[in-house]
Amino acid sequence: MVQWSEKRIIHAPIDKVWDLFSDEQLQLIMPQLEKHQLVEGPPNQVGSKYAQQNRMGQRVVSYVMEITAYEDSPQQKRKDIGFVAAGLFQVSLSFVLSRIDEEKTLFVYSGSNRGANLVGRTLLKLDQQNSSQQEVEELMVRVAEAAES
Image 1 (cartoon, helix red, strand yellow):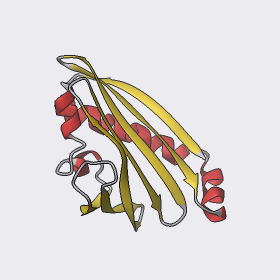
Image 2: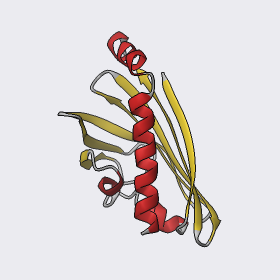
Image 3: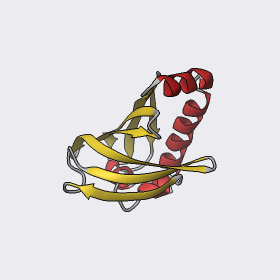
Image 4: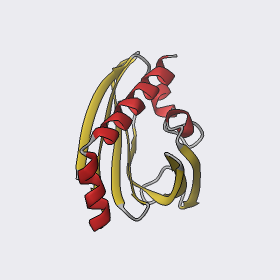
């Protein structure tokens, strides 16, 4: 299993950062996401499900993503999601924003990627966090750059 928790202060108001995680802007910070379509429940509610297609190298992987936690208060925003990618990896992601002041937001991105079966567990052992850590860092940079521009 691969786990991470990264923090970054973003020099932008919490609502501006939070807008980047909306259905309309999600592909701006996740350019590998080729499809993001609501398929069950109201948008941005615990239990809502979205059909997603994500480009991984030359392959496009389709899966259903479910929102497992959601909070939208003036001081803190949170969206947790989970999905099984390619039948191999059980992925849990958490995006938490905390208001520091009018122009600063603490962004915490945490998650885990665990093998859903023997093949998935073997592939994760071979990777040893190299690609996962790079993807985490790239997302943190994209969010900061988009929010601070």
